[in-house]
Amino acid sequence: MVEHTSKLIKGSLSNLLEGKTIALGITGSVGAVECVALARKLMRHGADVVTVMSQMAQTIIHPYLMEWATGNRVITELTGQIEHVTLAGKHKDHVDLLLIAPSTANTIGKIANGIDDTPVTTTASSAIGAGIPVIIVPAMHESMYDHPAVIRNIGRLKEMEVTVIAPRMEEAKAKIPEVDTIIEHVLLVLGPKDLQGKHFVVTAGPTRGWVDRVRFITNPSTGKMGIAVAEELIRHGASVTLVLGPTSEQGPALAEILRVTTSKEMLDTVMSQLLARRTDGFVSAAAVLDYTPSKKEDVKLASGSESLTVELVPTKKIIEEARKAHHDLFIVGFKVESGVSDEELASKSRVKIDAGICDLVIANDEQRKGVAFGTDTNAVLIVGPQGYTKSINLAPKREIARHIVSEIVERMK
Image 1 (cartoon, helix red, strand yellow):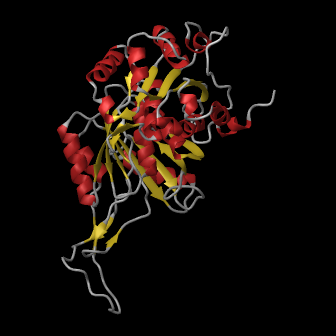
Image 2 (tube, rainbow, N blue to C red; image 1 turned 60 degrees about the horizontal axis):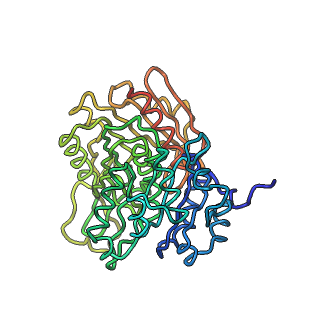
Image 3 (cartoon, rainbow, N blue to C red; image 1 turned 90 degrees about the horizontal axis):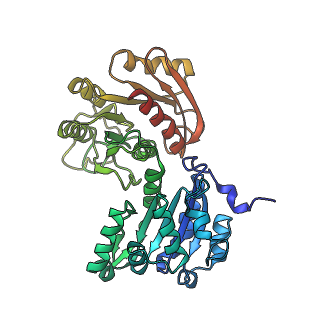
């Protein structure tokens, strides 16, 4: 039988959920309109998605739409096929996760109290009883979300080790969170826990060097690579503080995000974070300016001159300052070169390894197509001690991050 063409998108972003089957429970909230995008994003990370819908959910979006989105038949009623047990029973072929998004207050109350009268609530009871991970994403009016009984029911679900994702509170409504936020929680629940209890500081994005009140020098970094590394560390169970330079990119919802602008602000923030709490690793993925204007003029410099000379002075290397202050910290540096061979790239990267500054260096060549700044892809050379090198071919940055974090995990054992 020919596979449904909707499944051709599987793995187009990453293979983080490859081999995983997720049951997506949809209930009667208007947030159901986000479920197509949610299902497709799960599939783009490699998952197979099977939809289970309550009767009220079917009045908001048609089951055919979810069948198109996932390429799988939608479960709208429980029949002699005992679909809830087939999906979430105590057998080896059960789903890896039940994700109920959106979940109404009605559904939350029923699941918390073991009431099974819809395909979604019955599948949830079976999943909880079988020890299958369950994530519930509430969506309702704020007045309902603040009802004491709903609060108690959410607490009861958490006692059952059900993951409940906090909604977005906007316009007097508890709205379904952004799709990427839900995806982060899914990746965390289904991810390895080999970095559980460890804390990382990660830098990402560019920095700015101000010339005057309106002009600055910078570089084309978007921060996507550092953000992807932060996301992957979180998937492995680590807590992450992300120090993010000026970029339009949003950091992971599950990270502590500290926004900075200048190289000095990034240095000061990193050092204060390393001092404030026990940190196991520092990943310096930001494109920090090597040189910055020696001073910032307090006024806007007049235009129209034939020439303007700006004195640039070197900035302090954050990884070097971190190493001076924290000898046992696991440090990952990033290095960008231009128009060099892999041998030269490895040789230049190994300087920081041999000097004892970095435990790993992630290097790339910005002249290669699809690599480095402003792209969704990257190709890197991972350089470690004792002549170790590993080449990672062009792939989405999230996939590159998976390889980087795998190296970190292996070396921190």
